[in-house]
Image 1 (cartoon, rainbow, N blue to C red):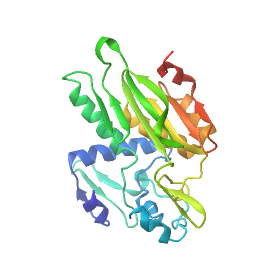
Image 2 (tube, one colour):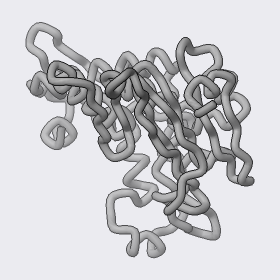
Image 3 (cartoon, rainbow, N blue to C red):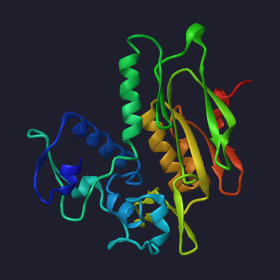
Length: 256
């Protein structure tokens, strides 16, 4: 990945793993109309997310990169299927932080399912290959963003993925405004949203991770409307004002 990002207008042969993640991210970009795209690395760096938190207050206020909208993978990156190479143009760099954890969790759970039901937690992105003994669901706590040491809800999941995207932990203040690591590709800046955290249940951890970011970027109203159009998705959202918003399908995962 680092070698690919250092190249400019040069085809780079990549590993099977990077090739697979790239195409998964490319499909996600198309499915979300470009809202979740990995061409945000330069914007992340400009916002200060390339250094320790204690150094962040020394930075100036981030400003939008050149064009208002960041480039898409589909239009910017040249790929050669036969040679399995990727070619990045000048000014385009990739960050798969928005999709890779969920993808990895799904892969691990898929391997483990041959030995029995498993729950894989990859830094909060959770993949569940099947129920516990006697068809019992796995209990998964949802952290309270206002009290990180406690849980305000428990989800009961037999199969699929759970992921949370939030701006409650990894954020810092510059120029009197809060900044965070969720970049809106439409502006090149940290997203302006009323969502503090979004926890999504989906058929896979990869899909849950993507959906949680879509909700955060759209905001609570449009985000829930988008989620309700997806099959077999559910979510609980905590807004900046402290209100919790539940999607229609979430009751299927709560203890009755």
